[in-house]
Image (cartoon, rainbow, N blue to C red; front, side, top):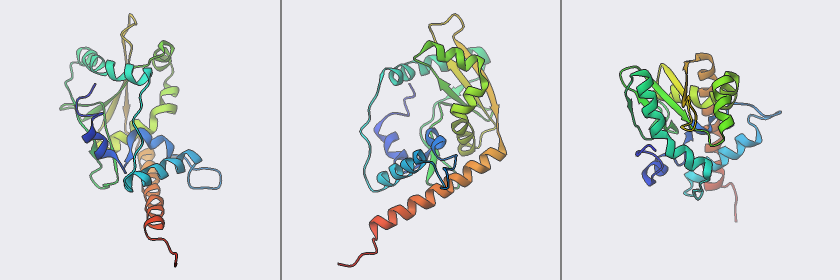
Length: 208
């Protein structure tokens, strides 16, 4: 587990921000609306955090497993590639102070980042290793969004399962500039809506 993440300082840094792991909720439009219901729910969550509220942190077996395996996955990746990975905490975008991400590691001197998934369900590792379209469907917004925030040239997607004979699967994703521009526009729009919601609550147009 990354020592610079999942602590109180990390939670405080990301509260009220649009974050890489949640970009998937705002990348798509809804029917006749700017966002899907999931998207609006996420925007409301960001507004609530800006007002001082927060969700109580919970965990489950899958999350606990993933956190426990992350450092082993990184070590396996370093051995397989010869790269050196550096831990990092929550990073803000250089131009937007309302958006950031927490990557699983920086690939030193290579201009890249990594994204680690350690599936609790064994079949999911096999799916990652054999179905590229599934990775893109489930994680493209996070992968491309993290490269956008970090200004990275590539993201190595890592699937890891120490129970397998073949423990690690690695696939390199390059930057998709068209998709990144779309994501940037979507995040900016989401923040505009969040600011409007915040102002409507803090400065209501009501007379008593």
